[in-house]
Length: 224
Image (tube, rainbow, N blue to C red; front, side):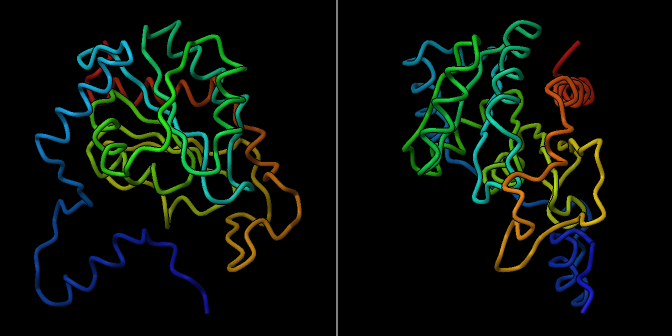
């Protein structure tokens, strides 16, 4: 059976369309409470970050190693954000991603500010205060889009048409190298080719990602 390459959100919305419900402009949304936003602002100030300044959130992790861009790319990207945009960079770290986060920190001179071990709602509130979020094909990227933050997703082997972040405030970074096996999503055996990290991801440079990020910021009128 050929799987549909329409976006998953569109396929889910079909259920409502079939019942005559108007879904024009419908997007996934995570509505945060005022106290959650206030608490996130306090967390930022405690770490020396101005909540009103240029803040970029990055998450180099994700569930499956074969679709992760890599610590080196995120480290260089963080330096670009700091040097060229004057941004403070928040590094989000999920369970089991401590070593990856430490590698990003050690490779980057940007002075990234790491947040780990936080409840998901707190992570969502922190991301909502960011001017931009950058991540892999993983759940945190969809969370960033759902709180309305301009979101850039780095996709390699998996299908961006089906599972990219949803909404006009999102953008994709796709690899220069296209492989015959793409899109790849070997059900039950991710990364079944045995390559470890998809070779296509290695064709994405930090400058590629930075260019998409600044383009999105300009489109969202958050950058002159």
